Image (cartoon, rainbow, N blue to C red; front, side):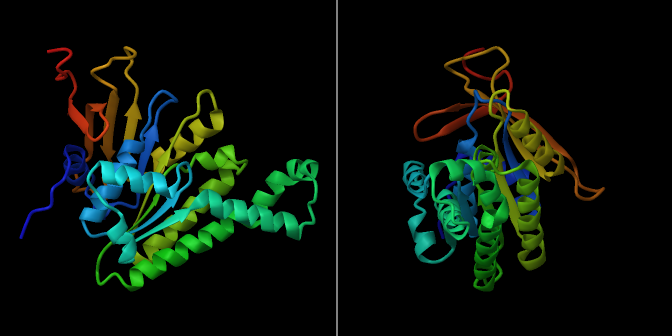
Amino acid sequence: MNSIKRSQLEDILLQDCQLGDNDLVLISESDCHVDGTFVIHSLLSLYQKENYNICFLAISQSISHYLSVSKKIATDLKPSIDSNKLIMVDGLKLLGLSVVKDCVDMNIQSIQDIETDFEDVFRKNSLQKLLDLLNSNVDKLYSQSNGSPTVLMIDNISFLLTLGISFKDIVIFCHSLSQHLKETSCGTLVMLSSVYGEDDKSEALTNYFKHISSTCLEINSLSSGYCKDVHGELRITRKRKLERQKKIEKTLQFKISDKSIKLWALGLSSAVL
């Protein structure tokens, strides 16, 4: 039997994150100068290779984007979708349809009315419909799992702030998802959260989820500024769930190319050797 071929980053994530023993895995972007989506792509690939049942909520990118990138990094998601091991949900499309329906129900007819009542429409029940669908998908995956673990992934939870959804509603939404995962399948919630420039709300949301996460994968830009040979730093922090467990803290530097990510320990870049 052939062994599973994993990338360098996938091996690091598998070793340090202990995938099956997490409640919440957070990928955090420390500022607007870094992009942590490469970790989302790597985790999605890794969970597929480790035979997880996956529900993936795409908010900041389209589903076709993830299918395209997966082929670039030699991980075809299509077989998992066809075999019902992977369910991909278009979050923006679902929220958009929900808002349109709510506008019709509220008899909102003009652009001015939509602008006035936009936040009210979202607060009403748009996230509840998304929550119900995701929980239903988790139940579906678990019922056919045959013992395989389940993971729910969200590509960028802080993007909901830009749609006018409140900090409180996002936190309640995520807590509800996490609780349902624990109760039904002992599953894991994985999500990315971004800090948008000087936006206090996105920074507060990211810091909140960092505080409650069991594992945090923090993407930082270099304090020294731009470098063509080093694109940023990945800080891995895995908290102890039990007293006997060892807390893991590790910082690596990385460089992203079109089809791969190279990582190394601090100070070992070819640029400084």
